[in-house]
Image (cartoon, rainbow, N blue to C red; front, side):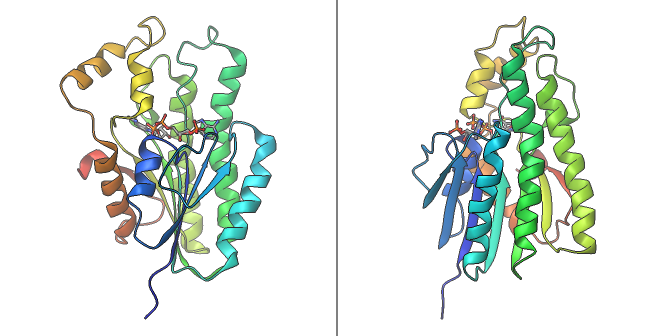
Length: 244
Ligand SMILES: NC(=O)c1ccc[n+]([C@@H]2O[C@H](COP(=O)([O-])OP(=O)(O)OC[C@H]3O[C@@H](n4cnc5c(N)ncnc54)[C@H](OP(=O)(O)O)[C@@H]3O)[C@@H](O)[C@H]2O)c1
């Protein structure tokens, strides 16, 4: 009997939650990381890209589409985990170029890449999931994280809308997943922030001191359990903290 063959594509697979998702992918998966550095040791293939640069999106999309259609996979899972908080600070005070890159990476790239992935998935008849990584910041305003929170709110609404579309035709499960506070380099960057730029920073120091941060592997296993749970319908916005 043939072993299962899964295609697992993770943007931001070089670090943190994305890397842990690749490390915890089902056995016999072909694992692709899309990131700038490609530092993950758990990949079969690295697609080098700066996703905050719109001129690179078409080439990334073409590479991923080629992998999706090149053979008959048993299951295809795409997770968009690439994201950044930089520049942390108040609008009107932060660097404009860094702010532009934040908006393009967190809000725009996920939607446009999501479009290309769903277009490619239309060409195959395979069980498929597309998950976007969201955050509690989608629903709570954190001064200093304006474009980040706005992008995650956009992610949630994109998933609700595209999930409703896929229910009508397409058949891909489209999910938004907020992981909770996970011990990654992003959390280290938060704790290194000046209170003037991020007034809530003390809460994140406290969570860290109290040992409340979730390990990336724990988050990744709960994330995979959600992906595997077909009773979670397309268009769902899920907070993993309810499932740990
Ligand atoms: N950690 C948390 O507590 C937490 C909570 C809620 C939501 N999240 C979300 O979880 C996701 C992953 O975060 P993390 O905590 O794992 O952070 P992380 O360890 O800093 O990883 C971020 C990933 O995004 C990639 N990335 C950043 N900028 C990129 C760019 N311009 N182009 C391509 N890739 C880029 C990085 O790869 P390169 O640097 O190699 O490009 C890296 O793989 C993010 O969407 C974040 O918003 C995290």
